[in-house]
Image 1 (tube, rainbow, N blue to C red):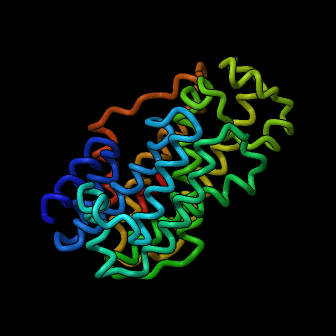
Image 2: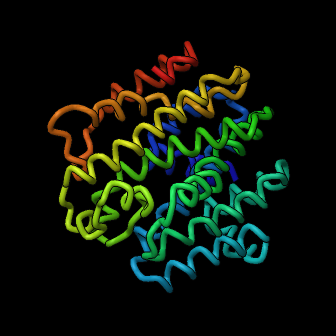
Image 3: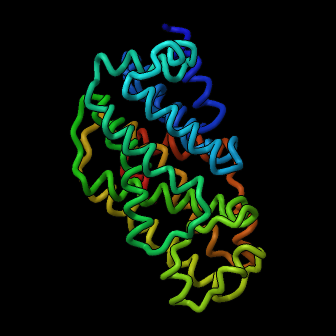
Length: 278
């Protein structure tokens, strides 16, 4: 079973370097559970990447849903992420229902329906990224307010929407809420055609402002030191969001951040947690 947790750690290191580095600041005896949770999230987020059509995506999400309910024990034992999850269920039974809800929320990813409103985006963020933050905090033995998980999930999700905009546009997915686009007079076809119009730039600027405010909401709360590692992946976001305010920013070519700089910001926040918001 140790091999399953090692696989999860490698999976997270390859797919989500920020979370991997942040988890190293958690107590050694808690990291396996964190890596299992994070690897599961990677698997669910990547369903759309691996299953380009609706039906294969639905089948894959349903498979994970059944694994979570213990209905595919034999197959789960052969899948290292599922095997690791099965083991932590025995110690942390509280994670099962939120993970099932995560799977349901990610059904949005495999459909091409647009995100209708900011409210819908924030609900999606709460059930996906927000749930991961909240569960990770509980795995480290802490409780955190709904405000913190909501704000953390919102900041992370908006950042993901901005970073994946070119990929989403190429397959005609729209995570930028329609009500924001309408407010600024953006034609969704401009997004799909990757036309960086002034109206689209203004709409995305509002999303960035919301993300920065969410980061401020996280650091405004006193978070116990024991669970601070959970929130360290947020550390590189603020400067990256500010980089998008520079002249010449192209929303379909998000500014890159050198790996060493991301790592430095996580290390800096680990030493002084409130630096997440600066």
